[in-house]
Length: 261
Image (cartoon, rainbow, N blue to C red; front, side, top):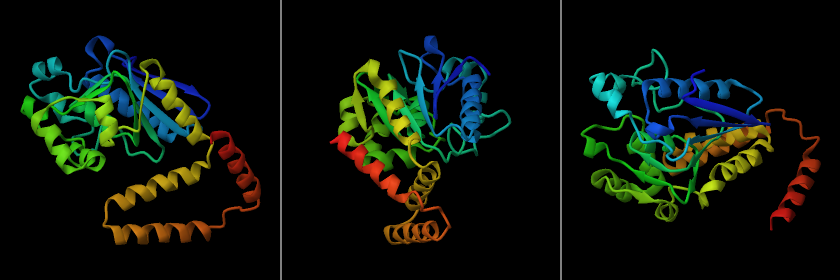
């Protein structure tokens, strides 16, 4: 595996680090391929329950590698991350059934912003900042920014970010709903890993089904989303899952709740 992406594991939690710090983790073709491959391998690994994605300090990801883009006359735009794949692939990482948590430790710009948006939710360092500079660069997003950014902050704010190219600081990102938490810089990755460990302590099949239900509901109107949830719940309850340990699970949930409030 290329050292442009580093993978570490702790129990059921894997941490993926984009590792081109001198280039502010700019998305070279090598990095994009390695990111796609690494995340895909973790998705296929049954011992991994949740994935944290971050960048080597001082940035999360500065977007496409513009030096490489200039030298290849646009070739860098013709691929996603995987060798042989084309821009028809949706997003910078493969489709996932496991939670992907973004630990945004610095700037996430343009393509790097899209990498962040590919995560299920985001934890931001106090040093984090976001910007969509596609229009300033004279290029168009192809990894779902015009879909995922309005989902996160609403259409009007998304349009403001994309048409101005202005930066959004961490605290404003929190107030707009783009990130879930803002934490001190040194706590960003550990905080995300702690949440990933919380996820890993759950029923893995239930977590995956929950994410799938959210994804299906996001693609339809409210009435159909209700119908999807009802259908999933009915199929789940009638699916023959073992309920013998339900009381033990209930007690564990109660004790955990008491420790948190």
